[in-house]
Amino acid sequence: MQDTIGFCQETRPESCGFILFGATGHLSSGKIIPALFGLYKKKLTPKDFYFLFVARTAIELADFEERLTAAISGTESKPALPEIKGFLERVEYIRADYGNDDFYRRLARRLDELDAKFNIRKKRLFYLATPPSAFEPITEKLKTSGLLVDPGNRTGWSRVIIEKPYGSSLESAYSLDTGLKQAVSEGQIYRIDHFTGKETVQNVLALRAANSVFDETWNNGFIDHVQITVFEELGLEGRAGFFEHMGLARDMMSHIFQLAAITAMDLPASFRDMDFKSEKKRFFESITGLDKESVSRQVVRAQYEGYLKEPGVAAASTTETFLAFKFHVDNDRWRGVPFYVRAGKKMGAKKTKIDLIYKKPAHGIFKPMDIGYPNVFSFTIQPEETMAFTLIAKHPGPKLCFTPRKMELNYRVHQEELSAPTEYERLLIEAMAGDQTLFLSSFEMRFIWAFISPMLETWTWDSGSAPLLGYPGGSEGPAEARALIEKDGRKWLSPIL
Ligand SMILES: NC(=O)c1ccc[n+]([C@@H]2O[C@H](COP(=O)([O-])OP(=O)(O)OC[C@H]3O[C@@H](n4cnc5c(N)ncnc54)[C@H](OP(=O)(O)O)[C@@H]3O)[C@@H](O)[C@H]2O)c1
Image 1 (tube, helix red, strand yellow):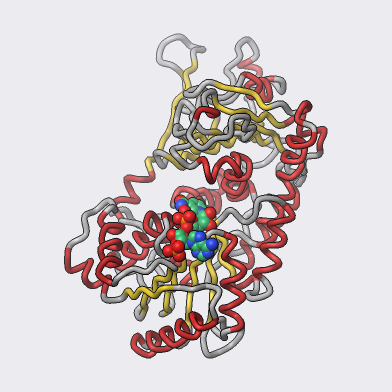
Image 2 (cartoon, rainbow, N blue to C red):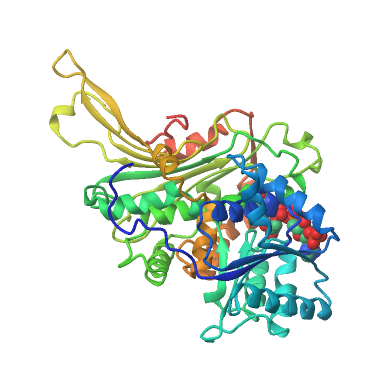
């Protein structure tokens, strides 16, 4: 194991009850239940805890335990039987009827009993893994039945975790947010963007904070431009019901701006959540929004060929599966440095990465030749987790022959060594510990909607000025996406590098 410096001991979260609504759903079985089991297995659960799973489906306890066993057996390492048994001893299932006050009375009684059994004093984390339409009705009933403890109350606490999509338009997002806040305050709401739970994303901040050689050069004095790539190889995979109404812009924008913020925000005074959030807010406030005219100049949208033949897709669907755009950050650090973004489905490679491209060298020695952009700092988030720095070195032989070289650190090697928490495990630990650093604030959620609204409006009302283009599956998107960056005299980096 490597030597480590800093706060390397994982903080054990506060004792609490974890209540999962929508426990029969895909998110629960695919992500949340495996993450709860992972925490249990890694001994990262609080000292005292229980899991109460809630859903409308009537299921016998034995069937439910079978489902749980299936969900946790699908995880990478095959769990041993005693581990599964120990986990199941902490789990209960209760059938819900969300519109009925009797259900909340039953729930309150059961929670009090579980609190008493596990020595927990009204400390409760509610995860709403239901469709967003259920967020408001459930939180309102939790509030009126006295199940939500007000902040500052010394007898316990209540927190609520929700998942995107946070609405489908600026108006619906505001309305959802305002509705939620009738029952829970901002300090109690934990909005997940699972990208922030990824080790490599947090590593961007660690690298910047600890190595002044990099952060000191991450500004318009040294950086020419920034590229953000979020490519998926897969297409719809049977998710037309969800994606047809979302489209790529709504689906991906939160991930894109979380990556941008963590890469380019000024470093906070401390990593306490309040400092972190206020610095991140300042970054978002510096981003120049798009107007209708810039949408036609700075945004490219496209749909992959064959999308209309996917099961469940409308014959004349105009849902975009690819997006490329450019934005600017109007602050002292980044003024004049364009950020280029491209994201899409059915691309030639699965790749999520951020590249900071340094300016070309000014030295006269390079006058006779164009060596391109020699220095690039790249963070790859998936499928591999690496950080790399490209530089130019002399090629052995002729005096003035240069060659690009890449120094690379494969982060996953170390992650596996330490069996670090997965992204959902990390986010659950933080929510149980009451740390909002890795969660989206109301401000960020509203910013993202305000940013994409001009795109959505232009595509709806003036589609001629921003036409929907096509691109073949397995490619890097339409030629217009190349033109977007090439007209500025730059080039996309290869997504497979
Ligand atoms: N799946 C993912 O990977 C993923 C990724 C990002 C975000 N999300 C978000 O996470 C949430 C859950 O996703 P999911 O894929 O698990 O959804 P899902 O499978 O469609 O629904 C989850 C569960 O919610 C319950 N439910 C359905 N309609 C309901 C309603 N009107 N009121 C109350 N409960 C209802 C159902 O359980 P019962 O009928 O048994 O109660 C269902 O099993 C959604 O908000 C989704 O947008 C999911």
